[in-house]
Amino acid sequence: MRGLVFLVLVTAASAKVFTRCELARILKFAGMDGFHGAKLADWVCLTKWEADYDTQKVNRLKDGSTDYGIFQLNSKWWCSDGKTKTKNACNINCSALMSDNIQASIACAKHVMLDHNRLHAWAEWRHHCMGQNLTKYISGCF
Image (tube, rainbow, N blue to C red; front, side):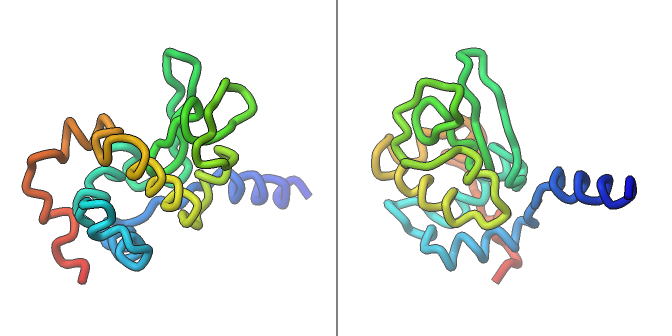
């Protein structure tokens, strides 16, 4: 019985960490390539630096808010975690942004693009991807 409980806990705690190309294909299929001017390589670079392709990445910030999931969407602005005073602009629970099925995360990231300065909303994109040659992020994936 203890072995079964351990297995359930390990399974629940495991996160989906995409490979670079696996994520590139999912994002391309979801219409992210060219969405509001952002290229596919921009999205793959962004998710590399924000979450290292990890769907369950959580980052607690000094202001008391938390970034969630593969796009590191913040509880102060984009989702509700029940702890942070939020605008919840994506009208979603933050836990949905940590699913291995990243469709809710993609929909919210698209919302960020339309509402909030495009890719500039993500600090890691500004620091690591903006103005760079990003072909290495999608090279060999298609």
